[in-house]
Length: 114
Length: 112
Image (tube, rainbow over all chains, first blue to last red; front, top):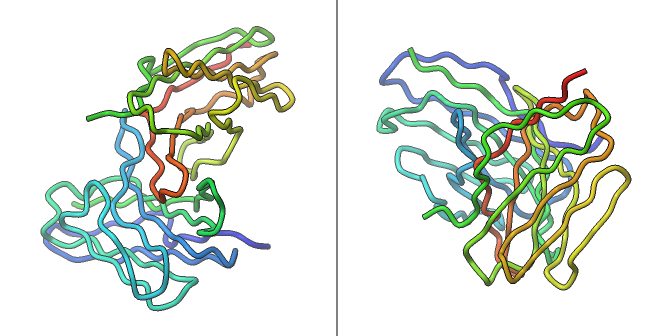
């Protein structure tokens, strides 16, 4: 089955530790995205990547880092510099060639920093 | 600067009746709009979309209406079913851009 996988579903970390969230897709999509969702708020874009080895900051990139070494993978690292890291993190992908950017989402990872 | 706004955080509707979810936008450059549905602890799933060259798009029980002059769109669900209980996000994009802009979401609850 084609789709987007995120692991783990729940993640707990101590304050001050970096943590990396996994995102893999087998849809052969060019573009990948990371969003953050907080209660009562919409999805806010952290980073996105249109091609391998290239990525751009979204609206709330501070305290996060990404890499895109393979088309299928777009891991997100939440660093200790992120002041409020506890949130639900969503990865998405889309065909770059499509005129309109319908994005397909993974199941999400809930990160709790203790 | 919230370019896409869903001013109702929640909506409660009786099963079988019509659910109407609203969305307003400020950027007149947006030319494509999407609705996503999200269950708790899951990723959003695409529901229906509309291009700015249309004013209505229908798919089964779901219809999206676009009023460009008012910069307003709405999602109608009829008849509403218990499985429709979820958070609904409105999103907008400019053709050629790679960034969807999402609203805050509206939590829809369908009561039996």
